Image 1 (cartoon, rainbow, N blue to C red):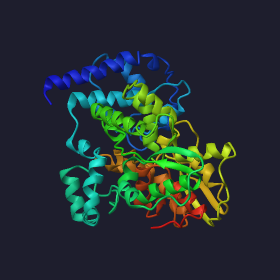
Image 2: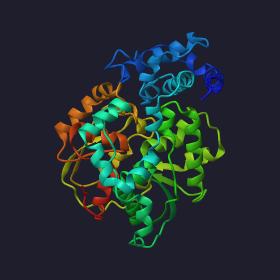
Image 3: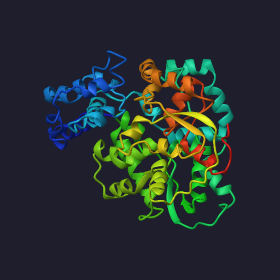
Image 4: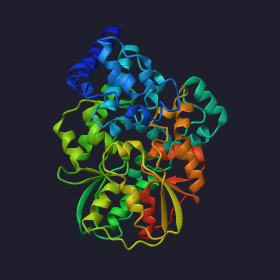
Length: 423
């Protein structure tokens, strides 16, 4: 990228930071420090001085100067915006400030590579055994850390020999005819390539409930690109995804097992990327995380609860990016409907991974320190299994505890008698 285009991009982002937010959110900050004391990153490292300090407080005095690099230690977990009693867009402000910094100083090749989740899935699926062997090899991981900057101990996705859409093409028809009409299923990159089994189970649960499940071809939501400051690429990704989801119907509920991607479509693409597209707004109002959707059915008296018992104590972690959507913890409530299942809430703020944050060599130890209370809780509570709503959080928990961690829909699938939890 030329210096001129980089400067133009940085100027555009700075204008958004200064004008679109119109300083209004900054002026609502009363320096109560609730966000500071709630920040999981500031609690474990002096490299990040806290969301208020690098956000509302610092932005008041920058006056066009470059954003300092400490903002890059913000994990974008969104906790600060959730806890702020004044409604300050702290996390959104910091994400935009980081994008200004990246536009001015450049984005590392590593950060560009790790955001290409669809390409990773497409490349790894045909050679899944080889890809998994390489990612499990200590020497290969050491080389990856030295050359690329992805920490040797960071969790990696497991490649599958079959993508979700390949399975959909080859599978027999649904076990029962639909009785409730159609809905659209959004599986996210992980559900399409790396956690195909959970995506299959989600489809089977929805079909069991009587829905016709439409699964249009779909790409990345752009969240990883956004969190790494690649706003232009993220904008293209989210617009392509919105078009794909709308292609299946513009009046259908969209149900997703990709919790953080759902948040991207509900509010982050608008609040952080600054997209005001009517198509995005349409998708954002129709999309539901799958546990949220099932609990809405339950509250309306439309969810069958003839669950088979599951005799197990289950540690459950609600990811920060799910909490930021303001819908409570529907998976926790849903799992408690299953007889015999003792669901224990982690009450932890964050697992530390924050999408791609905990993969990075310079941030790995911070991510591990952030997640330690959660890891300890899981190890003390588990009976062979844990549950969490978002993909990278599951990988982080499993990698750091050795405890298999699944999407809550996997247990719902089992409770409906559709099949036992598989390895």
